[in-house]
Amino acid sequence: MKKYFITGLLVWVPLGITLWVLDLLVTTMDQSLLLLPERYQTENLFGVHIPGMGVLLSLLILFATGLITANFIGQRLLQFWESLLGRIPVVKSIYNSVKQVSDTLFSSNGHAFRQALLVQYPREGSWTIAFMTGRPGGDVVNHLQGEYVSVYVPTTPNPTSGFFLMMPQKDVIVLDMSVDEALKYIISMGVVAPATGRAVPKAGAAQKQAVNQ
Image (tube, rainbow, N blue to C red; front, side):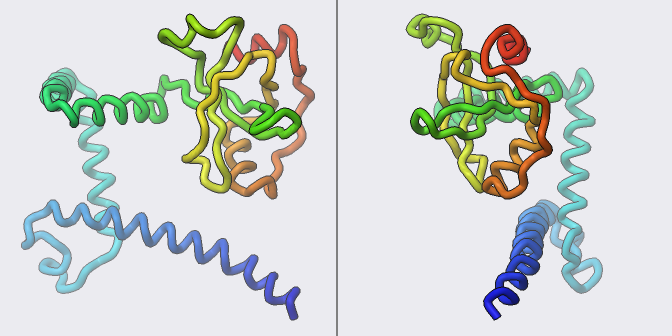
């Protein structure tokens, strides 16, 4: 009986969580309908609320925003808007920080999560998957001797939280694994293992070249 119960859970839990996440996304994006005048909302147009219409409106707003800001006039408007926000003390700090992170993560020329790594954390002898995000900068480099890399160690099963570390380059192992495969491995808590890749040297010129990419 216990075996059948667990098998049932393995079927319904992923499906239930997937439906719950989709419902949360649709419900949240449907709030964009509140931007429309009341007479144009689905309750007044069709006499009933139609779930998902807010998703279409949100996608339309995102597309229109990208289309407008892609030209010269849109760029000037965006610069004016950012300069306006930059004059508000608290808003300036929050907006600039969030913008730097979003530009790094979503920009087509961004370099977030460049390479999947294997590092020893939280102690020597314990290994976990991490991501290289760059190299230390600012005054930090004046206090570090040798070659260091910036590393993000995510938590599982939620990789959006984690720890930022600066580690000696010689202490990280570059994995023959894509970032997507590494994220799946982390989110699944090691259950969904990626396919075995070629062996990557733990040290030496090959590893240094991969880290420098």
